[in-house]
Length: 479
Ligand code: ARG
Image (cartoon, rainbow, N blue to C red; front, side, top):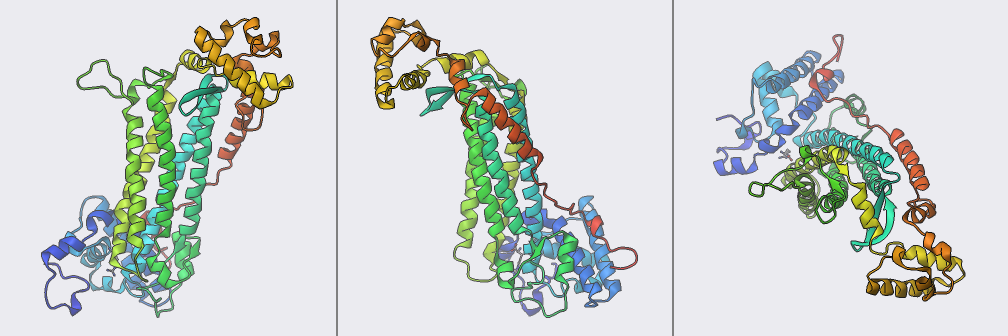
């Protein structure tokens, strides 16, 4: 049996059930690289501050880098008897460099250590998420550019409402994703602070240099209260809340893809590479990618609810409950990034069927509002114009005719204000008239596209260092 690093005050071995129940290595082994990098910088700092001998600091730091390359190359592995990633790494270090490894945990606790590890991981996850969002946004802009004039049905209540152009519809998702990206950036800014130095909860009684560690690890700030530092998981919750919003947006889009690709709508056809077949019905081509994106929403909402619930009754400061933060976060960030990454090429490769979209856009009397607006321009109050066109629609329905099939005389039965130019109201005119900022006129959508491109070009880049152990080795002439 391996001796536990904390076994000094214990007379009996841990019960096997307890060992299995409390172990987190299955989950937190993902933090090995972050743990090692954090420890390398901590050890170098201890040496620089003469808290431990320089030579020891150096052999700890270089030993840790070797522990990483052993793990990475499959030459060593973790043991669940050692509870978590921190104990495992320290034990592997001990096996490599001997008792000097015992100096690493000076002026540190697993509580500020794990808080540091998960923040490093969080920073990478936030960056991966934002860059996946940016890639999807860029796909949307390319598509919107191709469809500035593609007539598309606009819906309310999933009833045909007014025609729009497809580019406009796609840019709506650009806007949602822009807000999402900003939320992740915002969460990142707040989470980008170093907890090391908080110790178990009260701070440490050594002359440590927190600023140097923060700068070296690429943190923008230091946490300011040690009790808060070891028990704060707000940044994970903020990420998960932003993720919940983002997957909600993707799920809405996914739902539209499912509808649009159905026989009933037929506005798009997914590429064979982004659709799947049925094991029984040879004719089927299913939008499984979109359906799974919609389906995975539950997992991400679940992670948010789960962590909020874990946190809600916790007294200060660290409690073991906090160990439950990781699995949900890993799953939520993996899932969100995967959804974003598959969505972009699914959209880029789909085939739009403009004739079907136009047919739907022009059906359902979708120019009725334009006819009412015509009467308003002739001086009629909008309410009366609305009523008048409503009666006209009722008549046309009874006759089984579209607006285009009605004569001027029939129009005039409902209002003498209809002139021959009322017959000129077409889908194109309806679109072109909506030049209000944010409206669907192709000129307006083109302007929105230009400003969206600028937004994307000027989007801030998250400056997350590569947390690779070799980059954190001490310089040859010092620490
Ligand atoms: N595995 C633990 C976690 O994830 C590390 C911290 C353990 N600290 C402690 N005092 N038991 O939270």
